Length: 602
Image (cartoon, rainbow, N blue to C red; front, side):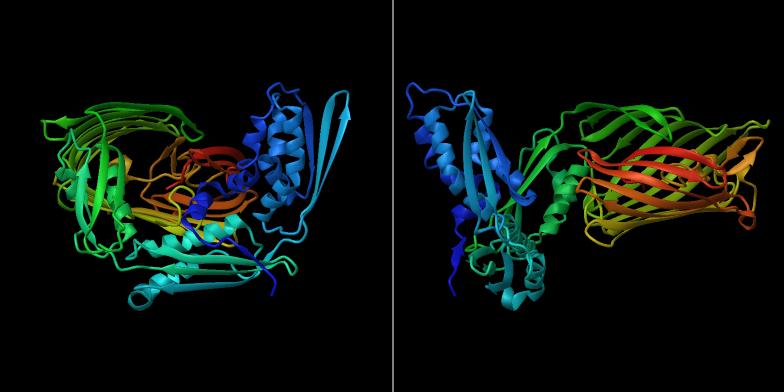
């Protein structure tokens, strides 16, 4: 079988591919010849020209961006000799570039015309049939073949190029790198590609791919080598470190260590590296370098949301209270519906990363003709791991509620509580599959700094279900309940529930679903909301959505009234996070509401 050997693996080519395969392809010609031509003319006559590329969309943008003849048309210092060279070299450059997209039999024609000393060049390209992948052969050797076949299967699954797929150099390199990354993720830190080749048959337009992966030996964690510590005790790092020397190497543990450190207030950046010497795989050292924040820091920001209007927020932190790395923080936020302030004094992370703190806060909320003043003071113990955040707290609430009706209510309670949040998604910023779960539980006993005995539960589930590469469903379910035999006016209002708004039931104003008393929407004992949303992504960054929401907030479950809403939206994967723009119709109130949100609603 006649063929072309395309890409035998070597370190130089692998580095070139990861640095930018298209730029490297274009450089095959200009890297050797163009510098000589540019230096050749001592007294050049300048050539001005335009370039028109006639080619299918599949390769047109590639040629416009990387063909030297096209790139240099924007310059005004190209000599006649240089122009002649660019035209002459264009066909060879085109063939090299389109080959990276799997087109190995292109027909290229150049046509130069001169009108009024202005040259125009037309490059016509018929790329021919795109080469298809006929076979994929992945071979593994080393310890993985006897120790951990699951890791071998993970590497096979990560290889994204399949039989029948169009061939391109970028997809080929990405697939090899993905499999190598999967192999190195656990045990086999020193894994490498021993050999790879893509054998192309330009007559039949097929390519046979083969890769040999060498896992090398199993690596285990060694001691943590810490550098960059100047202001804060190194023991903080060891307290949150989930890695134990002698354990099998696992990139998930390394990522967990990085996340734990960046969750503390002390470190601006964290870099972690491990030795991958296959001759010394046991207890390989882990090198960790940190860059610390200064003792004092001020942060602030402004923003806008349709529920709460424009807002401004800020905080001041001093990270070395008592000279013992106790963070002291004063923070606040002002918007159209709420004014909030909090003071917190925390301890450094202790064993297994638990953080103890004391706090005091005051919140003034004015929504739907109901104003709630809430003062809180208490203690809490919290820990954040890779996927789970856990908090235990003991908080004293002193709330005051005023409304359109006379006789404001006051309520106090000492509430032991537990909060648990789990994140299990494929991408923390732009998730497409997985779920987010939040659960809270608390209680209070009458007579123990509390006016009325009650129990409180709250849970929120966000589920992502991919359908195709461009389509997915997003489901949300929310439930809250305060269980007590008495009325709600003896329970702190900030512990009760209302519904409505961009992250609740769209089509209704923010927290406008509750107990209506003389036009004031009062918080209630029970809350239930649900949402189903279908998203279609037209491009990587832009998509559309259609959704249906429904919910209720009531004091008496038997008298509940569900209020539905539906609408359309725009989704944008912005550089700072997901942006959602929605237009919703509330069936109960017969009104249309716009919404703008930034970030994942949870």
